[in-house]
Amino acid sequence: MVGNKVIKNYIYNTLYEVVRLLAPLITTPYISRVLGATGVGAYSYTQSIATYFVLIGAVGTNLYGQREVAYVQNNTEKATETFWEIEIFRFITSLACTIAFFVIFGNDPIYGVLYRILSLEVLATAFDISWFFMGMENFKVTVIRNTIIKLIGIVLVFLLVRKPEDVPLYTVCMTIPILIGNISLWFNMKKYLVKPRAGGAKFILKRIKPILNLFLPQVAVEVYTVLDKTMIGIFGTDIDQVGFYTSAQKIVKIVLMIVTSLGTVMLSAMSAAFAEGRKEDIIKSIRIAFRFVFMLAFALMFGIMGISRKFVPVFFGQGYDQVVPLLIIISPILVIIGMSNVIGRQYLLPTKQQGAYTASIITGACINFLLNIILIRKFNAIGASIATVIAELGVTGSQIWSVRKQLPLKKCLNPIFRYFSLGLVMLIAVYGVGMILPEGVISAALMVGVGVSVYTMELFITKDEMLQLTLNIIKKKKE
Image (cartoon, rainbow, N blue to C red; front, side):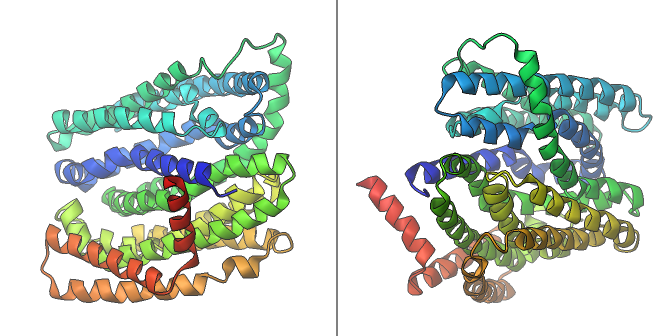
């Protein structure tokens, strides 16, 4: 099942996720210097509040919609009905959340202007139909859309944001492209849909319960992906701590997209396989997915640890030294989330085991919330970082327990020691080179080059199975 189509969609989805975060990545060195930690913290804090309303507006339809469309992707009539049943419900909830967000926060005495602008981001949720294209296993259209729109946003940032007081302008540059980009996707829908049958309201109602079943775990996810920033803003010593934490999370999350993009692609492929009863293909693909995640995640984790001391001053500028330890502390989630992504999104959700998936997410959310209350008060952003890693361990541990009798976990997890060792050797090489190099962009680039070269060489020398599989697929595609 892991063939040319999946590999192609993985590449497209990796580009989709990277482009989604490309604007902040490219603009961060500039914005961190122009707005400072205080400005970055103000935007991150208010945006974290808006994210809750975006989440409620989407009401679990991203994962649910992608999966349900994947089940009927070869039946145009059923795909049409599925799309409209889910999208109408999503539109109503998103519009209600937009109004509520604007009324509750629009007149805030400190951040009112930012909240009013961010209400457009909440509204944009109503028009986001990327889940449909992912369910149809067509990732190309979303990549093209995101690339064009994000490039416009990047240009606007450099043209309009000039001084610390330009936080509202920066918020506009980050928000408007999302709305425009989501609306633009609708122009590609004509070839996928036919005229829907009458009586849709009854069928929309039948979707509510399964949608809510997936809504709960997504709410829990946000507790330890967004609530961290909110709680640092409330319990931390100052808003700058939100800026430091956001900066570290931004880098790790962009790298994480490379590891977890396979999960988004495989959700559709696995759902189709489950619907057709191909259980052996599912097990085989899970084993390959685990190995793929370990190969990438350990290299990226140790790579971040090795270059952080040289990378942070170059990328963020002066005054961001506190980001270095945060990057090192948070980086293990690349491996941990990579594992939970394989079990949760590539197995539990496609096989309709939402209960186990939800339980794992709630476990992590509770751990994260409690540890945040304890650790943020004492350690600020470092406390939030520690809480995040422990919470992710809770999620992964819970999922491993739930599938212990369904998957050959010993075989799946066996490669972890191999790639840990290879990554550790790479870390020693990268750190050693960094010790003799001066500060600067060239030094950071050289360290990255050394890391890539050493790790790649290790894979070739050890005749790595995952590397050989990838090369064989590429070779067959060329033939």
